[in-house]
Amino acid sequence: MTELTNLGVKDIRDGVASGEFTAREVAEAFNAAVAEAASLNAFIVTTPDHALASADAVDAKRAKGEDLGTMGGVPIGMKDLFATKGVQTTAASHILEGFNPQYESTVSQNLWDAGAGMLGKLNLDQFAMGSSNETSYFGNVSSPWRKAGSNAAMSPGGSSGGSSSAVAARIAPAATGTDTGGSIRQPAAFTGICGIKPTYGRCSRWGVVAFASSLDQAGPMARTVEDCAIMLEAMAGFDPKDATSLKMDVPAWEAGLSADLKGKRIGIPREYRMEGTDEDILKSWEQGKEWLRDAGAEIVDVSLQHTKYALPAYYIVAPAEASSNLARYDGVRYGLRDLPDGAGLQDMYAATRAEGFGDEVKRRILIGTYVLSAGFYDAYYNQAQKVRTLVSRDFAEAFGQCDAILAPTTPTASFPLGSLNDDPLTMYLNDVFAVPASLAGLPAMSVPATVNSDGLPLGLQIVGKPFDEQGVLNAGLAIQQRAGFDAKPEKWW
Image 1 (cartoon, rainbow, N blue to C red):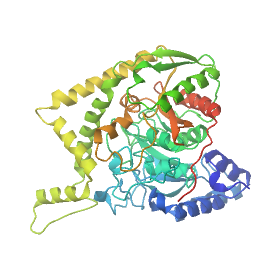
Image 2: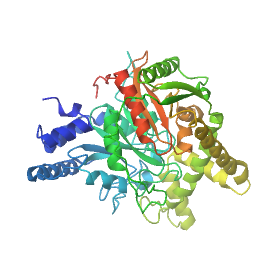
Image 3: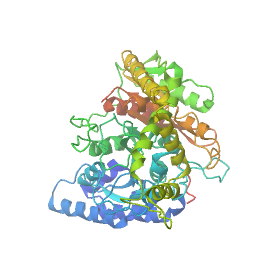
Image 4: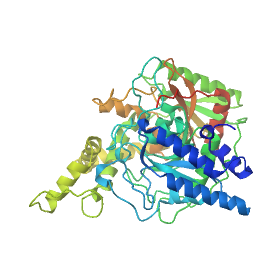
């Protein structure tokens, strides 16, 4: 029998359903793999009992001939941004250490209802703020990948770095991620896996620790396009508890998968050919065009003329919303409380936030508070919102000429941990290709394409029309089938 930890969502689900192996055997195999991989620091908390209990419930259903659910018997990693009832939820921040929610996020509940189990809570950049998974209070996550001929620890991307590292290392068949400005797609590209950010509102934000509410969106991370389609189907759906939730039926994405792109037009945005992009990335982009042509698509040039303003606009809008969202962490209701002797209320607020928030979170709160202040609101925040509208309009016009857009996911491959810590602006540029789709609320996916000259994975990004996750998944499948990406990291952990 194939080693169970080498199987993905579809193979595990189908194998459990057919009786090839039990859900408990799968859970035990992945629990053991998680325990062995502590040096990756991908998990903040492990929950082997949850995985086993869910597996036993699935096995009992199978014995009775009952429906096992679309994720029946699949244990997954849960990004520690999703509230999980009775299990610590920290957003990788000291300020929430010890917080055990008395409720379950809608997305995680949907997954448990579909038969999935939880291996544990995955590490991330603190409050999802970061592109390298180095801002977590609980320490850096290491990518399972290494540069050829080097033992330097590499970044798994961020903020969903624990998720990408766990899936790439085969210690979880799939994981949840969240994407505010690229936090599913960029780590997926860095670690050679797939990840899709659905249309804004497709997955409920209820019970997900907020960063920037008009941008945050949950999505799946897995090793194949098919596995992402299965998991997204389980995660998505209308939720009356989330005012931004889409009141739409969840399409049958898995059943609709097709790599035949005859009659489809794929747009290539000329503004994405940016200075500083690695040559290997540009080569993989050219190769991606050939793969999509081979699948039957017509390749057309499109213009997204406000692209160069998207990143600066994002780094005004997102911190502004973060400064508002993070005001709730005051040391009064939950999490950390730092109360110096003889301190008043204001002193407690200041001491708690100084102790509880990391440097990157403080940086973004300060930026956000500044751009929302009376003298600067019109000069910065209002202008950024106008740019956001123009970015959305660019996409709408481009989609008049094409069905989806092909672009690189990131301007470079992964980099060594610590190499960009002193240069926040260069770190922010990691999101340059991912941010425009986030600002426009569009579905977008990263699919592994190849490895570069250092043996590190590179991803290609498909951006689709609003609500057209199917088109994005299908184009991703066409790339996956032609790329034949089967590289995996050499085990060192």
